[in-house]
Length: 408
Image (cartoon, rainbow, N blue to C red; front, side, top):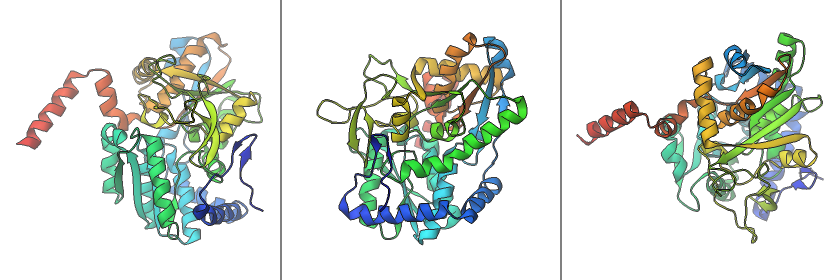
């Protein structure tokens, strides 16, 4: 009997019958891999020689001095190959694809980092690759679209629905139904039907394992708090997993957008505006109306505007193990600017949500305390959004000049 992956009342595998055998095949392959010591050994070898593991933790000395509270340490997932934590998951799933003998991979992407990572994995392993991306995200994450295409992937803009991440996921599932014999869906976050929440969390747990060991080696004690942004939940599950059994407060930070009362946000748990429902193959909290129709979401960060959240995180929130907060676009942009100014680090806008929440709280902590922030990605991909948000005139002149050159 195959476990259907429930976490309390959340999770499950609500799939069309046509996909049942494919999902069962994936469950069996994943369980066999977990029980094979050579699989994790091969995974670690790839991550240490092809990516940049272990990624370091960095003491943010200047930010610490600026706030005058707890000492701030940053887990540097931005230093991974492809610029974010996403590669941890896709390289692991790529090994599973090889085991299952499939030749094509598909994926959804919002911010584009998962798409770039999947396209990179496909290029390395020799798979055909198709990436589904909402039309809105294609426009605001053009640099990542460029790299996906250069890596050989077909990028399909999704023009249905709200044209963002949830719609890209829907299209990827539609593809999988018609191509499951030779295709694996590389779901990018800890959501969707079983075994994806568990599987993505398993590969991302490398973040938390490293971070816990590193902070103990450097400081001889654990942080009092760990902060991570939460869209679907993969980077949060990754770093939080290293501290679940410790007396450490875990803080998940969602997209507060224009404010929780504006209706333009993606805060499913922090806002208490989310409700339990079933969609895209699993049960969790979604932003939905009284008829169960998914609401439109918004965030300045393309990777955080997902309508649902990991069923594992939903369960841990109900257990009181994780505290959820939300930060607004304005708070995020301010935190982004301060981090660049004080530390020379350029967090992705997604990651900057975790920084923003930490900055609101750390002054109240003791100088003997440590907090750890997961910098899940770097901000290169956000250059268009950031330049626009700050009304950078030199950038606008550059874009205008380039447009004129192309027209000529």
